[in-house]
Amino acid sequence: MIPYRISPLGINNRHPLTLTAVENSTVTLSAVGTMSISTLYYRTSSNPAWQLYNAGTQVSLSAGQNIQFWNKASTFSSSDANYLQFSMTGKIAASGNIMSLLDFGSTLHNYCFNFLFYNCAALVSAPQLPAKVLPRQCYWNMLRGTYITSVKISGVTLSGAYSMGYMLTGCPLTSIEVDFTEWTDNAGQFAYWVTGVPSGGTFIKPYALPEEYGVRRIPDGWTVINK
Image 1 (cartoon, rainbow, N blue to C red):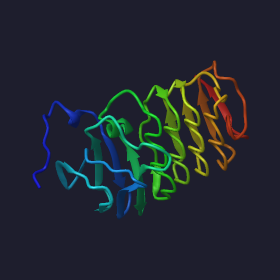
Image 2 (image 1 turned 180 degrees about the horizontal axis):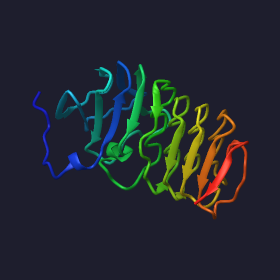
Image 3 (image 1 turned 180 degrees about the vertical axis):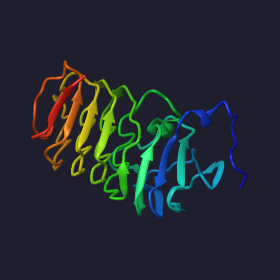
Image 4 (image 1 turned 90 degrees about the vertical axis):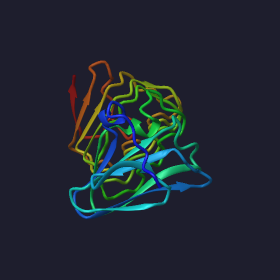
């Protein structure tokens, strides 16, 4: 197979989704249900040429090595029954822009990242989440069951039902930062999104966002910082 190469002025300057091994680890992105993908590329720190990724391929990483992903299409997972999901072993730190999974577009679509890191106990940090509009179930269960301790959510418009439902359930979070300015929960956008999060963390928010608490709002017992 000939690796896919691009101009140095292209994706190489855009900080794609990066998964770095804190210790010897493995990373697999699998297709669930009838989901398939033929436009996803990856590269590793030991092999920096972009090449096609086949869903279900396990990539082994030694401590300090990383894998990056880039999708040449603007679509990803398609429903809550047909989606792409990571599984990992070891300990993995995520960084870079999750929008590289949508060819660095600015628009999410319904269900696009639901269940993406679901129950990845090896994941200890979250990637950048810069999307501005969050449609139906786009982050549904996305980071649930991971071991991340902080997350920043840049979306300012939650336009779809259950867009962040169960997103952070069970994570040992100590810090959440958001940019939205209202709790638009009429369609379950925040349904149980912080269930099981420990008390004692810090919630950073715009001053305009009302200071409300519970499993659909700010975690109980957290300190609020207005920005």
